[in-house]
Length: 399
Image 1: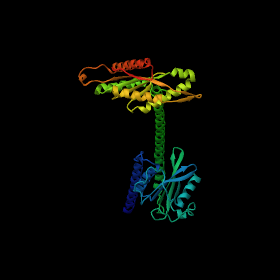
Image 2 (image 1 turned 90 degrees about the vertical axis):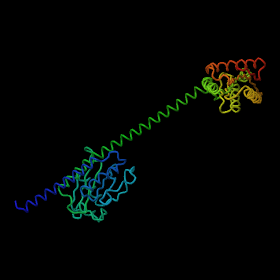
Image 3 (image 1 turned 180 degrees about the vertical axis):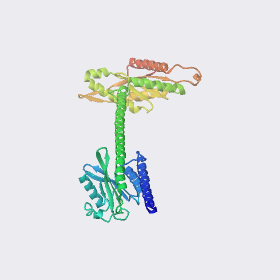
């Protein structure tokens, strides 16, 4: 072999080596794509950038099947290949589709095979559609249109193009279908991952909805267990539970607290004469009046059929008696008309009060339950005294 032949062979080997390096670099870049990219469009652009950077492709456009139609996902060309993706969350972008690309896609679908054209202007399959293109400001002269597969299923298609006639030599004609095959695996894996993520998000939303409903049901049933269904006031269970906290604070900070028991006089007679509907109406109105006269910090509950209880934090004996007198007056002023007959009621009130004196500080005091029992016992005794004296009055007994 003469020197000229050796030189030619070396040049050929160098060219093959360069193409091999470029191909491996492109495939390596494809394998290194971050699968966490937010959108399919971003994934396509990363794949296209690998071809532009390593293989000299001037334009790569990828289309996705939407039903029976192909819609562009993204396009990368040599002028904008390294630009960041705008609005990464969007899966598609507005891509100017070249007529020759549309013609190549249609022909590939008809023939069911990869389409290779090294001179679209003289290719009878594409010559009518070949136009002066916008790929880098030069005409498209060579292109390869290849399906992107996920197993045996075509999920997308890619058109690789160059302004150079004869650009796709046999080496490139083998590379780009191989690249499309690898890219199909990446695209399919990304879609599976995103589908799983969507399913996880949907499942999470569903679980959050169930948890929210559970919380609401718990709150609903909790409110039912703590509220009197007739008057809407707290019930006996809540009153004595909350009362422990109120009395505990009073003992801890040496502040006064008062306990008030109220009993509706003659409710049985109202029920017997006018029916339980009239009695229920009277109880609801009494509950409303009581609520209107109390502070936000006071605790009010219905603890029996015709019995109500109040805890008055920061209130001593005098304040409890003053409140009791106001309540007596308000209830006396209530009137109902039942079957043409006027109905009136009154209440009896028993009060007790606890004032923890300063000199008790440093001495061990009985527990909250003991003081609650003492307050209740004294208020109940005062209520009994008010009833015995004729009702419609208040009585106070100190602890």
